[in-house]
Amino acid sequence: IVRYASFRNVEIIPEIDLPGHSQTATSVYPETFCGNDSGSEYAPEEMRNVLCAAREENFDMLRGIIHEIAALFPSECIHIGGDEVSLKYWKNCPRCRALMKSKGMKSASELQDYFIGRLEEIVHDEGKICGAWNEAMQHGTLSPSTVVYGWKDTDACAQAVRKGYPTVMMPASYCYIDMKQHPWDRGHTWAWLVDTRRVYDFDPADTGIGAEGLKKVRGVEAAQWAELLDRPERFVEYQGYPRICALAELGWTKRELRRWEDFRDRLKNGHLDRLGAMGIRFRTDPPQVRYAKGTITVRQTTPGSEIRYSPDMNEPTADSPLYRAPIRTDRPERYRFRAFYRGGMSTVVEPVAASLDVSLAPGEQKTVTLPLDEYVDRDGIWLLSLTQRGDDATIVRLEATGPDTAYCIIRNGQKVNPFNDLRLYADERNRTAALNVTLRNNAARPDEITLNLRPSA
Ligand code: ACM
Ligand code: ZN
Image (tube, rainbow, N blue to C red; front, side, top):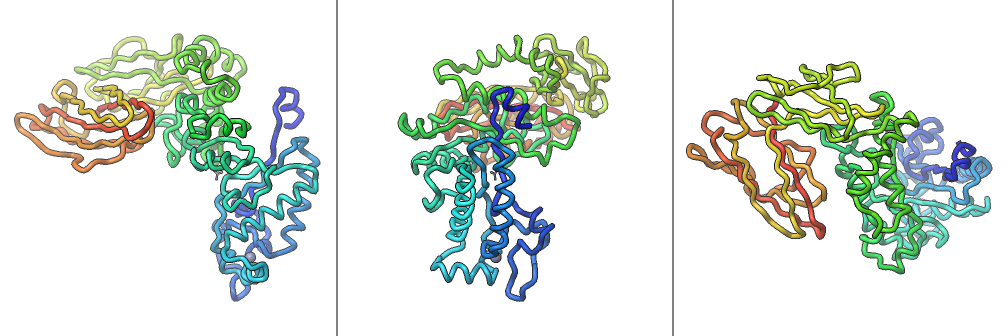
């Protein structure tokens, strides 16, 4: 790996995540975990997050591991982790408590600083510097040479800079490419919907650190944690590309030379072809699929892509029927569509009856109306989804009003959540209603929200 990367001017920085995220070690070597007052292990294996901080043999073991790692990887930096440490085991461990007492520590989080400090010493003895996640800098005891990787949010990134640490910015809600890139994709959701545009839109300068602070920023990074990458086949590439391309351009191109539309056009007019020629199974944009008056009509969004479909709710594959002309059907909710392009493919999408884009300035509130009688052609459940470019908007109010009906669906506000469809039940009374949706952008950036209405199976 090191040789392959070095040939391409890429440096591999290894990470051993310590002292938390150590379930595997503490399960296989139970003696590395904390004890409790009766001296036995007491937590289920999958819960044993930390290595015992008071067991000197643990540091001997880590010295050996880090020595081996240091010899394998030529990089100047070894990342020692430091994130998401469960302090409760240390608090309950007689050995850890005795150590805290002997060192006059008042809290278990000081024990975390102690552990990180011991690791820094071991790494420095190897002639290297450390990398660590943002939690490691909490109390200012971290060595000034240690590179802080800000993952939690943009505030954590800015704090690392303000404390003077060399900083890699990778706030999860922009840079975690294990997140979904479309509400109908596979992937995590906890950090937000992270599509290619959102990665491209991130800028370290927007974290409020000023021009001097920017000098502390070493660069940006994407995280692709692998626990949901096991299926479908080669999903790792679908999640990686083109979001990595967007991140790379963000890293090496001045802000004034970066424009989303320009990047997107270069992707679709050459760069996806290049990825395809390299055999990479990238993700491409889904087709636009509309349903109206008994007919599904599809428009490609990547020139030259093939659109394939399934009429039975299955995921279209490369062998599924090719879409050639509008499809007449009274069961649009059963159809699924997917774009294929040069080995890459898109999210699987369903027909949408109504789609409305709403632009909102910072702080702006706006009411838009969807006349249901134009779109809703049958009784039953319809789904209203709201997808968003930003991450801080509210559905202030949502109501259905018409000649035969008037009721409020959301009265007291609710955060826009692209992962939660709102379910609307259509019958002969409210099919003639209008949906009035009042939206507010709470963020300091402009936002664009797309409302989609589709029939549900
Ligand atoms: C992390 O995602 N806990 C670094
Ligand atoms: Zn312990």
